[in-house]
Length: 219
Image (tube, rainbow, N blue to C red; front, side):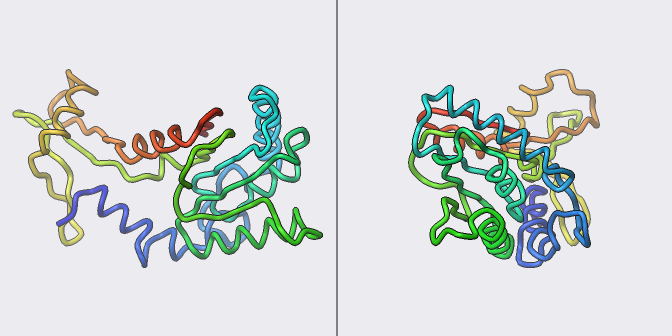
C-alpha cells in the first residue's frame, strides 16, 4: 500500500512512468502539449521579461536562468533566439528528471542556437543546482505536475488516500496532514477532499533559496 503522492510519483516518474516512457511534449506524435509548443511567441514573451529583469538587477554578468521541468528544451531555445539585451550575459540551466529529455534538449538547443560555438552557455541537470546566483528561476507548468497528498473530511477529522493493489483506500491521516487540512479549510463539510501540495511548496522554497538576487517566475 502506498500513499497517493508516492503512487502518483511512481506512475509519472518511475522506470515505467509516463514521463519516462512518453514521447514528451510537442505538436507531432507527442503525448501532450505545453505553452512553448503552441507558438514561439511564448518564449519571446519570457525572453522580453528576462531582458527587463536583467536591467532591473543592474545588468549582471553572468545572468543565470534556471528552468525547472525543461522537457525537450523548446522554451530554452526560443528564449535564446529572442533575447536581446541580456543575451551575452545569459547562462541557462535546464532541470529535467528524464535522462532522455535532457539529452534531446541539449542537442536541440546546441543545433539551433549555437551552431558555430564549441562551448554553449547551457547546462542540463537532473535536479536544481547548488549555490546562490543572480537571475531567474522559471517553473512553466511544473508545480501542477508534482503529486499532492489527498485528504478527505470525515466525521472525526481527516483521512488520507492510499492505493493498494490498484484500488483506493482511506486511512486516518497523520497529525501533520490533519493540521494542514484544518488550517486550509476549517469548515470543510464531511466528504470534502483537499490536495496537500507539499512537493510544490518544497520545490518553491528551494528555488527561492537559490536566488541571491532575482525573480521566481511561475506559469
